[in-house]
Image (cartoon, rainbow, N blue to C red; front, side, top):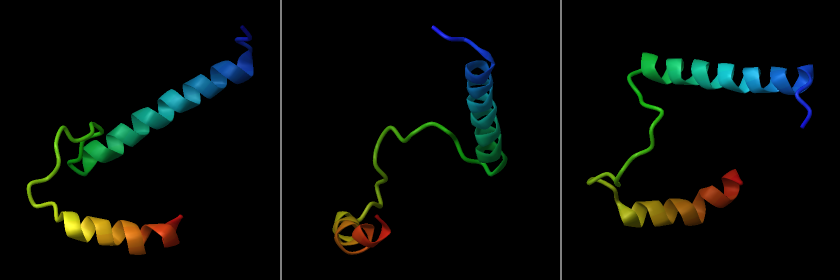
Length: 59
């Protein structure tokens, strides 16, 4: 296993970016954790339309 300077630097950079990302989310009152359940207000029909019409254009 190569633990040369490049690999060590890459790991440090990833940790730094994760740390900064969590800080930005926290600053705006958001969490880095994913939702445990779906929103009660979720409109399944609107979601399906969006997936069909909008998402292919995004990809």
